[in-house]
Length: 392
Image 1 (tube, rainbow, N blue to C red):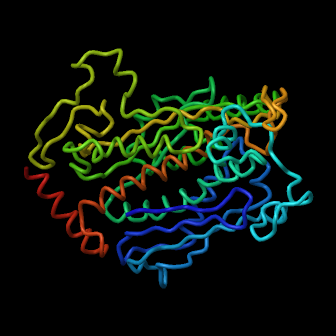
Image 2 (tube, helix red, strand yellow; image 1 turned 180 degrees about the vertical axis):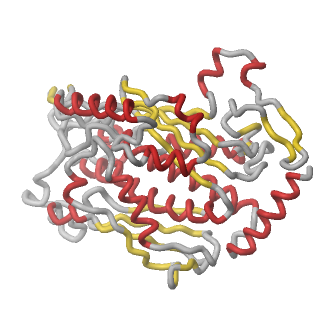
Image 3 (cartoon, rainbow, N blue to C red; image 1 turned 120 degrees about the vertical axis):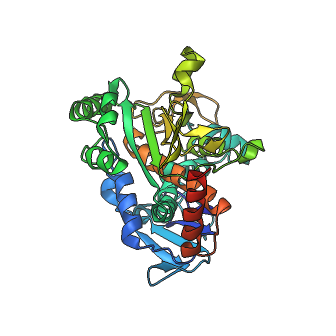
């Protein structure tokens, strides 16, 4: 399985092509639109979410809501393009009128300056920010929706929540009260910040509101969990085949993510071995089990069969309405950075994107190991493999 996205933030369309999804998988626009709405409807999002509603059009690879095994093309129209039609027009040369929204003062923390240097966009940094914008992640969420549909067919569930926004935290002790991810989902999706509890949700809202009044931005941490993954996906034989490494790369590839860990992660650096390793037990019905999950469902780059636990650190968004020091790329004079419409925080939406990226990498791993041509054949192979693992 592989995919590619295309499109600019204020261009007419966002697109994705997915190759390698088996035939026979039920895929609907409602299924994908549900995930797109989750990305949009998060506390701290900006004005653009009022302007447009992201909805997908399936252009190929699906017939009568069932995948064909051929490449799937997904499309999301940018309603906001109506306000940028001349500025983003690919068919007319630049002139004074259609270049009136030039960006010449790069924002610290954004791709503006480095991208302009790399691609020689010294006349207008908008050529950088239109693609480097987090708007691109709308299509990752759409692809992730298809990946989640595939994973559900073999009993794998993926869901995430917000651990903290700035100094406001979820009550992490609540995690032990949930029997499964369905229960967790029902709670976190009831809160605008996707926190674990009402007190944490209100504290996060307060931080976001205060940050917005200060014309500032704020970061945080998200956690994604996956249950039901078969044992042994990924591999230890080559660095490039380690599944946790692939997930780590996928998480860091999301705009504004600056850190990732698994299980107890960086906390393990302060512990001793007998506090960290997940002890092994044998059960006549289940086969091998673990007494804990400190390593987040991975050993040697492979799934252990335990709950996969991935955390990502999200930095504050670089676009501030109280802009920071910058330099005009034309005159080299000191100026305040350019201002683009932005969110107060990306954290509450970023958890949905992180879910999508984890789901995509897990789906790739499943399709690497089992038959990728037809869903029923894949499910048969997964069932046989699970029984082989149980009897090992």
